[in-house]
Image (cartoon, rainbow, N blue to C red; front, side, top):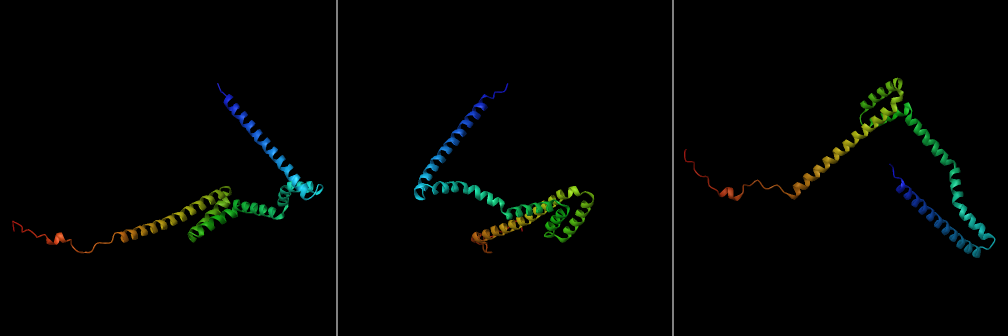
Length: 188
């Protein structure tokens, strides 16, 4: 019913190819190591050459562990975790709602504060979700204002280009209309 032979053959060929690539890489690293050993042994000496070469190979691992052990990395992680916890808390959600709406309207910010206070007392589990929705709606409103301003600027630019490229004709009747006589009406 199910034919897995093609999939098994593809997997087998992938594993064989990956193994060959890995083997070639290992052989290349070995030959590079032999060449570096010969170079370092000639320049530094037979005693210090292998030590320096081993140190060069272990240098990236040492840099990685030193970087992991530095305290600033832990402080950054702790600070980002605290910011994330604050953003998901009740106070953080209320703060995000009020901050996002204060740029739009102080009245909306006040209404959001009242609604957030009610939700924090009655339905605290829904407050982060409502805060995300309010922030997203505010960003959409800000985007609409920007798009409207861009559209007005584009229309004004097009109107300017239209008037510059096609000047308004003078308020003079064309010559052929002036020379044409009015014919008298027959039944006057």
